[in-house]
Image 1 (tube, helix red, strand yellow):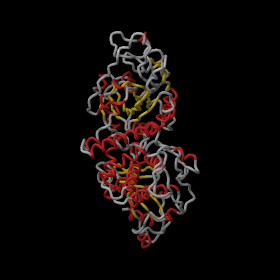
Image 2 (tube, rainbow, N blue to C red):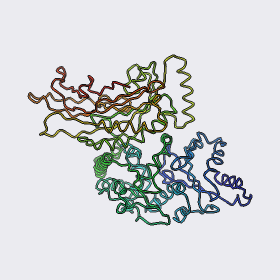
Image 3 (cartoon, one colour):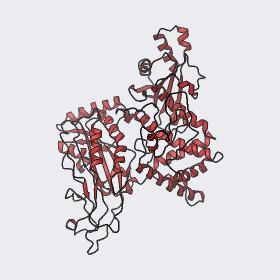
Image 4 (tube, rainbow, N blue to C red):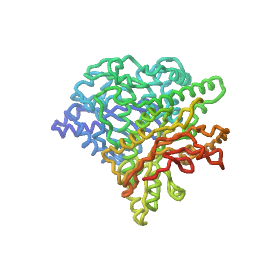
Length: 593
């Protein structure tokens, strides 16, 4: 198909039939498929390499039309203005991302090898970026001593990271290629070990790794292009990486920076928001994914996994224990709940992607709040569809406080992954809502950040306060700067909740943790504090005509329990003061939507 595309484009450029047929064309795969660790539902990243006379405009016209004419291809979506231009489609039920790269060669033979750095000469920035994924993947496979052992170990590590909820580039953890390079490095250190031993060494070594010492699969090399490579001694920006994992293919750069930009166009739900201003070509360190909190979480997980594997080796437990599900929603007493809402599936697909791409920045700002030890983001959002019968229900759904009668009309359901399917769903839903006056369908996506507050010091006196007004206000301001933001049809709410107020859907069928019983304070110690946290809540409406205002609650929080506010009937209950008072359940009340 790619050869046929090159032939047609060559004819369109006025070439003779014989020369057009000799122009060639070749495809390369990369990512999880090329590494051999793909699974059900994985997409195939495909690079289309063409000769120098074929343009990117040809790709987004001729090749796009060829795809749309194929019966096997559905949901064909071009993203021509992305940082890495791509055409996304489902081909025979398999998700495929087509990238485009034009070489400086008059013809592309099947023997073409992209590993030669001279191939990058005379190419524009987007072509070099497009080739980067394939070059990095091939270099990883070339550098590991035993590909079969590498693949088995990588499958194990990827499953473990997904089960422990630390597999997400966009939320500040590591993505697929970064995990692959870490496993590849352990394979290099132990070239004769079996996959099980590689997994065991993986956790021990990474827990003890002296970050920010970089992980390198080979020495950093200079190349033929006038671009800079990762060098913390020379470039101050590169010193800011907390967990630098350096790509083995020239030009070497930090994988976290490279992957963050790439993931914005690769994942269907993230392709809509405009990517951040592109950095200069191949400038490592222009985007810093890993935060202090996410690094702390990953280090803790490495330690826990290392201890489990030690027990597995001596026969005290089984491998099942290693892949035990995460305990994120049982781990913290307080959480930030971020609710992005809108009135249509098509709009929500874009809006949630924008909000999700900024959560990592909120985490980074929360880390600067005194007494806040860790801000732990969950790796995915929860998508819900609610049938509302009046404006009051719309406002409550948009703030995340869904009443019981609306909860019965709310379902946890993934949004359509493509624009066309989302628009079709909107047409059906709007027709249904129009039949009943006042009825509206609201789409929400909820993200969670676990908050860990440092314990009160033994010699500390007086109430403690936790002010997170700046991080939360700055976050809402940031997401509202999106060029397609519409106050009348989109909503964003950030509020704190206790673990006891977490909705049932986050537990995915698991048991909700029992409420903790607090000891009755001793006489004379009425001012003793119970650990707590609260946050700012800012809201706009969801649905046309609802988002007509917003209000921010006082985020300077007294996390102590004043004597006058104690509930005499229940010594196990405590209140969190927010602006002089709180709801009966201790949650922040949002007074405006």
